[in-house]
Amino acid sequence: MPGYRHLLLAIDLTEESNQVAEQAVALAKVFGADLSVIHVIEPLSVAYGGDIPMDLSSVQDQIHDQAKAQLADFAAGLGIPAERQYLIFGRPETEIHRVSECKDVDLIVVGSHGRHGLALLLGSTANSVLHGAKCDVLAVRVGMSE
Ligand code: AMP
Image 1 (cartoon, helix red, strand yellow):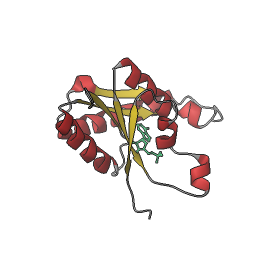
Image 2 (cartoon, rainbow, N blue to C red):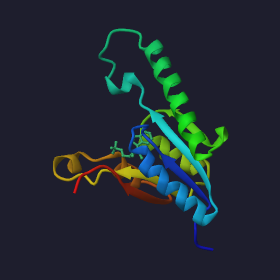
Image 3 (cartoon, helix red, strand yellow):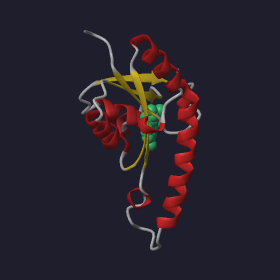
Image 4 (cartoon, rainbow, N blue to C red):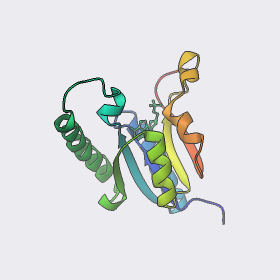
């Protein structure tokens, strides 16, 4: 039967996450589907290529704790229980794909800035999630670009 059973909402914890979440919540209701939420923390050592000669683990712990609280708050506002909240270290597109496959997700919901020009060439998370996804992907247009 067509439709969706399990939606995965990917959020970067910016204000725009609300716009993306609204659509995901509405769609989950229409289909009577489960809704999970994921936020991926990019490890500092990856972001800075190991160039900083200091131990970043305590900074990383603080980032993790802050993101965990923010994600829990956000998810609670949407009525998403703790067991469907995923906070993971890694590359966003890789982890979004991995969780969606492990958890039998059939629709991934991401935000898209509808970039063009150079930014389009450089790619975006929405683009990266679309390429290589084993299920459908909904890109919700966010921000003010025309
Ligand atoms: P971006 O292309 O980075 O502007 O992000 C567009 C969308 O990708 C966001 O609205 C989220 O849906 C998703 N996204 C970006 N970064 C993350 C992240 N760290 N964790 C989960 N989703 C993300």
